[in-house]
Length: 116
Length: 424
Image 1 (cartoon, rainbow over the protein chains, first blue to last red):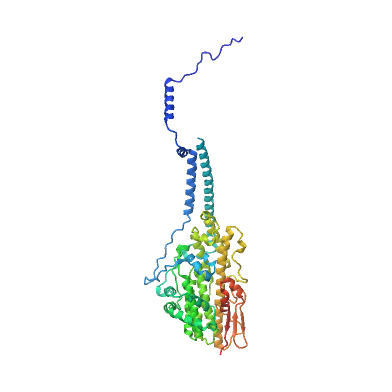
Image 2 (image 1 turned 180 degrees about the vertical axis):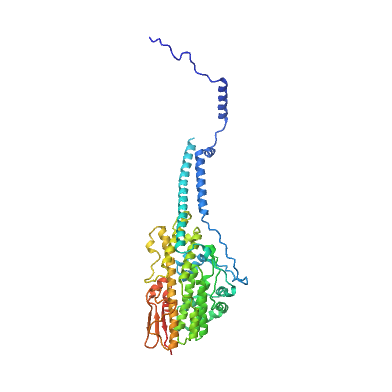
């Protein structure tokens, strides 16, 4: 017969303070009373999705910035005028591309396309 | 919660796919910008400035500017239906082949267009011209009404031939001089399409000059006037300038849809803007290559544009379209330079015949005119006939010239065969 004494004899679990139990139960009740967030709100609040959206926005902005960098800067026209301050009347004409179809019989089909 | 997880997974997947797409687009854009900068530097180092600023020409005084008269003159032309059919047909035939009906129709057209012709004739002998093209606007620049200029040139050619046929040598000479001024003003611009129109106008002038020189009765004074009306001897400068102008304009506006259309936009919607810089880089490379071949002789008929690249990738196609356009423009310039030099030599031969009573046995050396025909890369053919007349021609063929210029075959004899009459 084993007559060794139980080493845990006399020890009891620590009981939480009685006030804590009341607080936990109150918080649980309040949480249960709050309505659950909707699906879209949950998605909106999701950190991973937010990170994805931020990444996409950053990439889109970077693309736009790189693309806008290629837009040509305006070039100032020379301001030299004729001595009499007159010059031939301007032409309300068309661009080379706009004229290319009409000129195709004269210039051939391919040529007007590479004009400057 | 299951719905949330499914939707979240879906959204994250979409975001990853879109992100990868945007990342790829960004990488392509950055690489394109890098390559464009690289080839632009190379072009500027090996060819010249790739900026439109250099092409904007300083204005010249209105009274010295041939365009002062040419622009309103060309725009004032009034053509009824079928008028241009008549005029166009007559520019391809010598006066001796005209019918009485042709002549009557032309007279009516010329009578209607007296105001236009009077204005155009005011530019005779004027050597300075500026169409004031806003080059800084690149491919969106408004340019003169080129069809009006071509129609005016055809009318001038027909008027000159009619006058020569009727013995009105002064009007024939005037027509040649006005055509020369009109061609010169177009060839002076750094615009490829205007250069080509200038060459087409000069073709009409040279055909008239050929008629004049080939007809008996020319005096030394008339020959002097004819020679002075010819455009300046060197076309290399204008061709190079036009090629550079086109390259600079294309690069400036490469993001415009029109430019991508010009190379038969090989990209699906959306991708074209991402690849625009790479397209521009290929355009510059094609222009750089074309510069090397400017004024190379054309020894065989030109082949169809880039047919060898039709199955290639988009880069090969872009290069083929641009390269072929520039090569054809260069070939046309070479052909006109060849005809222009023949005109100079023919006039010198006529002058020699008037002075000495006969044509020289061999072609004389003329200052500014190379001994080699630029179109063939070989010597010109020249023979003095037993009756005292002479024939001067380029050894190119109608087939070759027909491949260089649309409808070129009908002008082949007028440009490349000069029959000089015996002195009587």
